[in-house]
Image (cartoon, rainbow, N blue to C red):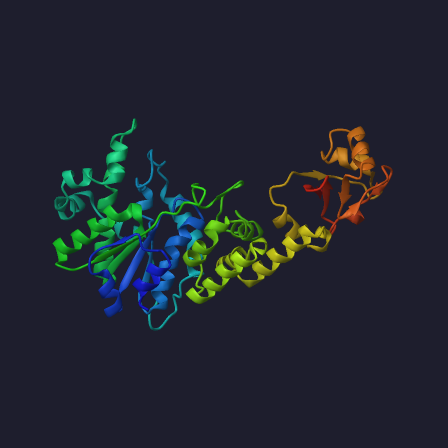
Length: 420
């Protein structure tokens, strides 16, 4: 199978320009995908465009991850109903640095046969004069053609309209393609389906200025089977940075995907082959309660983004939470597993507090009387130990690693109490 066939069976081809299938089968090419540095981390939606770059390298082609340090100063209007807030150069540079390591998890920059490259378009766009750009690039694009772009039309029809800044974005992206063509012989650009107009603009510029042939492949924009935007959870967007979305939360996001999406996501986001995914699909149909596709999906994607240790920690933490063995986890694991649950900080003398005083001071209950009622009803556990006597003393020495207590109120309502 060639690269195009690989992307096609995985459902990663929404549309492609004429001839790209043949050139990918016949030649070793250089191709690129752009990443918009609007945040210090990529999110799971970006994985959809990271995977084709990784597949490209596996088939012996040379991938370029283009970080938009220059275009990020303007912002792509594609898919946006209002203009993005402009970022400072310092903000963009900080964001570029943040996503660099995340790309390196998927691409081999040391390969001797098909090395990946990480390129920042600020290297040329921030040095380009306005007069040179309008003379050398702008004259090759008509306003008529630019007005036909879906992203432009939608914004023109909106209440706020579109600024000249964003209107010119497609020209900058076209110029990026030309620069990469000149510098690295890059002839293929990939991107989301909303990038079709920007990609074809670059192809046209290469043809006009260099007489060269370039190609484009666009990927589908993902929605869940329920029709919602992919990459969101109850707590918000799912990021690749473990300091924003913990590895446990990341693992749980994939574990909890809808049965209707699990096999499709295995094709999109893992390197498992057709036979392996077919076996998981059959296992899921045979034993749906065991969620075989989702478990494989969670393991594979978490391993790719965070490593083997993160997978082991996430699975151990999930098992501990399921079997009421939270106290067997380290304080760091507990902070991951219970990230986002209500928490408070409490100063305690060595002599400690009665459990009713403890629960009230830590804001687990509103009053001592509420604490007493919960205890009498068997509804309070502290570090997995059910509390049955309202006079029980709680002392700092009982804290996990001397740092925190895990209080469970009822069956599944958790609280973290950190010692000051």
